[in-house]
Image (cartoon, rainbow, N blue to C red):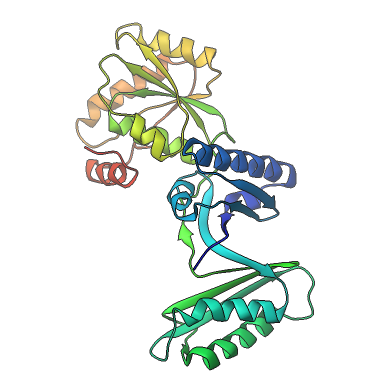
Length: 303
């Protein structure tokens, strides 16, 4: 099947008030373009309410990039046609003939936006009947072997056969800034959780930092601001406060988690909060080491 575009879906953005929604959508479009441009993927990105469309000649290469863009809930490689029943039926048959036979089952999932002289149910019944006649496949709406998704949006219709899960969250850059001291992979995981919620991170590393951070940033389509300081000495808190002020950061994110030696850790957290001029966030605080290691692996941070 030769796909023509990729449909991008987002989640939480749609719940925002109109002005905020438009701003978040624009940020997400820019992040998509930047991610694809960074990987030298030619692209044209178009936006309409509730959907973003990516047109590119490199569909397969684009999908793993897009699913790692914060804010994207799912993507679907798709084919576009005009909105009339005959055109939709013809394209549905072209797709299903190579994938279905009498031993397979299928379902048609149709949705519709706009004014038309037919309903979503009309489309599902018509296309389902045509596919059965052409392929002898069985209809199974509960657990089909194969699904044909038909998304009708005004005068254009999109057909696709899968929804590929994205990372979700909020678009990077739609919230405030945080400062992250890179000590180990847990530090990057902690920062990842804040970036997943739309925060931009300023990364601070020392000359002793040994983490290989470039692959992590590449995987998650991040153009990081990285600042190197000499060492974690007695002036660390002062340096962090100065950098937070200089880069207009709203909070410091740490890698602390209460697992072992929690009494010493709580004392250290208390001292840190006393010395910092900005709030201190601990996204890993309630996780055990096993959970942290699994999540690190999930987001591409190797031991």
